[in-house]
Image (tube, rainbow, N blue to C red; front, side):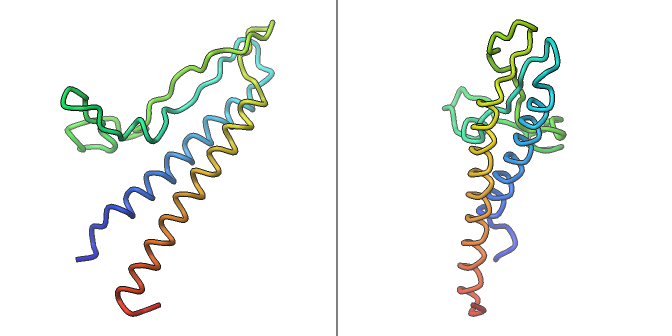
Length: 128
């Protein structure tokens, strides 16, 4: 009965997405002075999993899921619009800092969902 709860899968996916996005942001900040480096970002968690209607394609999030083979990174990474630095570097430290704060909030939200779900589950089992 309690072996396949979607709320835990969703919380795990949210936390994983936040961790992967934080890695991309950290890579952008590490290359802030590299000539010609263009910043990258991950697609939003919401857009990766929202339904787009009957014509929308489903997204494979792990090996064997929907017969997909995109197991290493389920969220698409894309180039961000460059900031226009004279040396060709498009990284804006300020924008990356704002993104890092947003990612921390996303991760905290995932942990809160997980903790709340665990509390509800413990209460329902009489182990609070």
